[in-house]
Length: 133
Image (tube, rainbow, N blue to C red; front, side, top):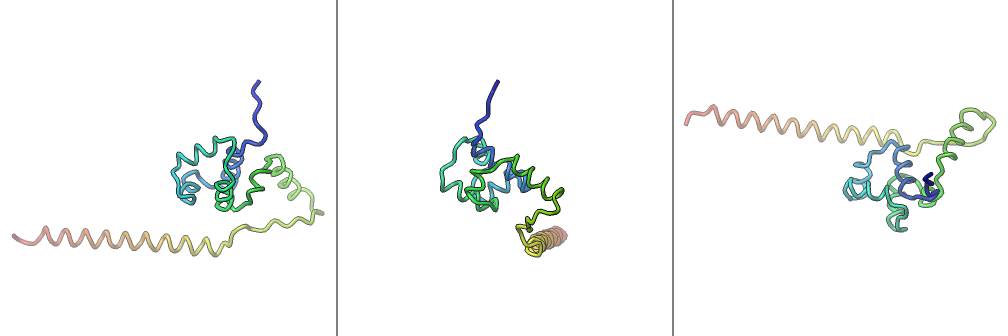
């Protein structure tokens, strides 16, 4: 029988990342490292404090939140939120939806500008081909 380490920091990082709906590639980009480095990080039993602080910041949690993460606690919170209406817990959105909308708009605008430029480049190329030599 294999026992898992209860405080395997890498697995906790992976699980929090998954619960946040974030891909390894996204975490890697935010940290300025490769996806393979994130994979290695998530397999690590321990992570130095400085790196853990940075990962926590990107994941939108505290360093202690990662260290003390328990999947059982998450499910208890979810269960209590939906089944115990007397609980005075307040779970607010951790991001501003308007910021996400603006971010998506900016991304789409950049994509559109690149597509328009690509079309202009094609037209210019075709016009050069059409000119007699």
